[in-house]
Every structure is written in structure tokens, then in C-alpha cells.
Image (cartoon, helix red, strand yellow):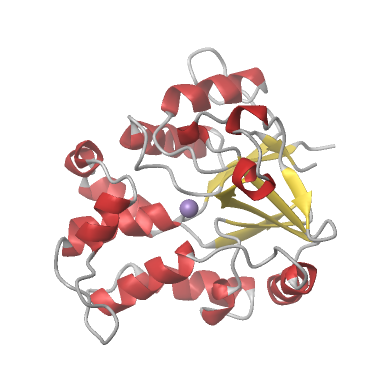
Amino acid sequence: MTRVYAVSDVHGYRDVLVHALATEGLTDADGRWAGADARLWFLGDYLDRGPDGVGVIDLVRRLVDESEGAVGALLGNHEVLALGMRQFGATTIPGPGEAGRSFARSWERNGGLAGDQARLTDEHVGWLRALPMAARDAGALLVHSDTLAYLEWGRTLEDLNATGQGLLESDDLAVWWETWRRLTSRAAFRGEGGPQAARELLDHLGGDRVVHGHSIVAEMLGRAYADVTEPQSYADGRALAIDGGIYEGGPCLVARLA
Ligand SMILES: [Mn+2]
């Protein structure tokens, strides 16, 4: 049976990622793809917070190329934040209720790093802008965020990704800000209505369960970061949270989905 894995929210911790992938046999000691017929998905949030976000992006790009289609990568809210910072800086967001808000302010408050901004090339930007919002593999619906906001962009996986491609080609600050806002929302699959919400997303986009990053497992469980050793299945098994909270000292979870 083909092994399928997912990793999310690496947030600049390239060395932690390299070690985690090598431990699972997906890369060799030099960080080269060694996964044979396995598949691996990255669920976004490559940069900000940690020391080497652009190094993570370069590693993921190389693995996508080396694996010839066995490695895929999705867009996270921090990619929108970093690219929004690059494109719009401190320009204030138009509209009522947005007073004083800007990508620069949110970037500063959410772990943005000047070093990442300085090292991002036009080639990086082009690659990041083209990342899809969601994918399906091994019965999993793979997304970055635990939110139903994806359905506001498309009611099928194909429509969602088609809409997503256009968003970051826009010169419109309001479009970018709304993309950031939606992708930063969370916790849709928690609590009493969680299973129904997960089912709604799956009904439209396909798959048996939602696999997501973005919300840290330890914070969802009220446990210490270092005590988390595996992804969390919840919402009657309709959701799997895989963000181990690397930047808080938690593990880089390499979630095996099949
Ligand atoms: Mn996130």
C-alpha cells in the first residue's frame, strides 16, 4: 500500500523538518527525496516565526521537483501574510472596521521576519502564489486551516483552487486582506457543531476526513507542547489536526494518513 504523509506549519524550522523527514525515511541524510513510492503533502505556513523560512521554502520546492509529483504543497495563511507584507507594506486596509490595520501591522504581530522578506525572490513569490488551497489524497481532504471559509471561494475542490489561483495575482489590497482574514479563521470543527461542519466541508470538497494544520494540537487539548507525540483525531473522526507547534517547542509531526 502506498504510504501517504502530511506535514504542516514548519514556520522556518528547516533543521527540525529535515530531521523529521529523515526519521520517517522520506529523505536521506542530505535532505534528498528518498520516499520511493510514498507521497508527502505540506499544508502551508512555511515561513515566519522560525529562523529559516526561505530555507524551508527552498527545501519544499526541491522535494516537489525531485519527487516528480510525489510531494505536494498547499498555501497557508502565513504565505498570504508574507506576500501581502511584501506587496502592500503599511498601506492601511480600506473599509469601515479596519482602522489602523495593515499587512505590516499583522506581520509584526504574527512573527514576521525581516530576514525572510529580504531573501524572498520573485521566483519564490511566483511559486508561493501558485500554491493550491486544498487537495485530496488517500481519502483525506488536505487544507491548511480548520475553517469553512474555503467554501466562500468555491463549492468544489476544482472551483476553490481555480479561485485561489487568481486571488494572489490581484493588485487589490482588499482582496488580499480578505484572503488573509479567511485563511486565519479557525476552530470550525470543534465543539458540538464540529462534526456537522466537517461533514459540510467534505460534502462539497470531497474526502472522508479533513486533515489540517494551523491550530496547534497541544493548545486544542490544553496540554504541554512537548507532550504531544501524534496528530489529534476529533469531530467524530471527521477531522485530523497535525500542527505539533514546532515554534513553541512541540514536535514536527509527520502524519501518516495511509
Ligand atoms: Mn496557519
